[in-house]
Image 1: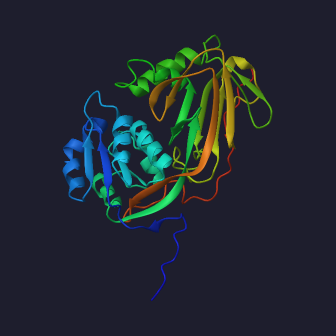
Image 2: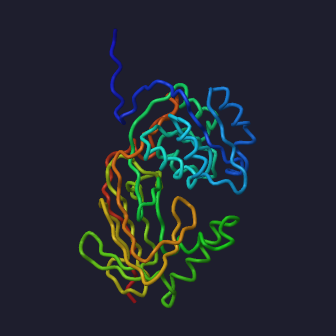
Image 3: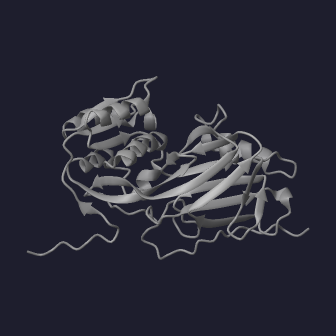
Length: 315
């Protein structure tokens, strides 16, 4: 009998779970789950389905499912909801299934789930492959994708953000990225020992994003054991290098007051002292064996992790 070659990204076949539970947000992705009759399709795979109603506590529902003996947890919804369920799965060392029923499905993209095959993603429960990936946290709060401070952190707190994300982000940037704009009162030190105070943007991600390759905006790996850190300074800082990107296993920041942040797209207020850390291999993830299992940037040659930014023009 021929032995199957090991998957270069670590995926391995696994037995189906005995008591899988899928949580479904019917409002995510403009009603994707409802349009595809996702709940009934999942039940056809032998999955217990919990459809969220307005006012439900996802954390409480997930805790109840684990208490009742769930041995696999899935989420069909946005990235913020995915992080809640994935965090519970990581804490209890049970597999997590990502069903891309949200709007952008960033985690699904980097995990190698086919975002155009929402129903096919349910196959992870019955015919799945599994690997371990990292999670990141800020002050103990777990996240899958990134935490954004500064412009984006302020933008997600504005009431218009949900309905007009791009426009709200641009309007916030216009107010901040001016010589007299008010930027977030944060202070941090980069990997070269340079201090950044009042940065316009701080992005901390669970593994670094590809910045110098096409397509941009995805992560080549989710198991590198490093945070990706991007800092963009305000124009009036007078710094020779207006921004920097590096990787680290930990990052500490200090602010003068509560910090507006966007964590996996959700608006969050954080305390003045922040510590970001990476948790290598914290999460067991399963995807359908028919899905790619590779992010768009993972097939590219190893990138140089350096942020190329235009230098300010000399006047």
